Amino acid sequence: MEKIKLSEIQFQNILNQNFDDHFWYFELGRFGEPEKDFVDNEFSTDFYNSGINLWKKYKKKIAEIMCDLDKKVPQEWVIDLISGDIRNFIITIVTLLVSTYSIELSLAIPLVALALKHDINKFCEEI
Image (cartoon, rainbow, N blue to C red):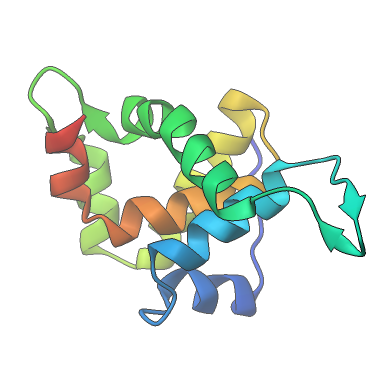
């Protein structure tokens, strides 16, 4: 499996603390809707709510990759990656999402950002 390459801007966006859940839900909805209909020169799609629905859909899939679902804790390799260079963690999770579930990079980035924003330990506990 070839690792995905991310630009410096993509890394900075994922790690930017000013981008809250609302921003990432919107981004997820925006990139998760391949066909957007225009109505009166505006998008008719509610990107924010679409993003929330996509997050709910993929949250479990992300947990299957990152968490020990029986113990509700992060997998050991996830802890090892997080304690090192966070970029390696991001690349690994993005690569696994893209290759395992055949999703676009434009969806994987907001999904990983949301998982990081939710704190990995809490994320695994809540699944």
